[in-house]
Length: 129
Image (cartoon, rainbow, N blue to C red):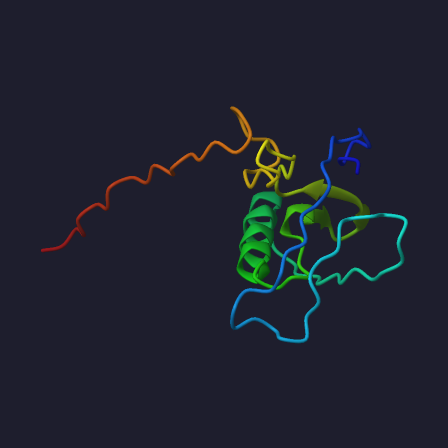
């Protein structure tokens, strides 16, 4: 596997994931990734205004569909509408010691797999009479 700059990325053998309970019953488990095996990739074009919005939406879609065994959320990418061959990764997806994959953003700071809680500002009281 290579990243968007075509640099090789280290990869451990993928674990076969089974669909979650209540998932699609006829959906086969995702086989280990092998770029030499034939298969199909579903491209779902969704147009948004900017790169940040595209990455956020792609991450949300991939995460929400990851209960399906055939969805490989870690391989989610975004591109501009007029240059779809130049794709940018959404998730880091590098292998971790426990054989899972890093769910953090592609260009995250700090070690892979480290959970960072989002700090949201406190809501401001509504201004009124």
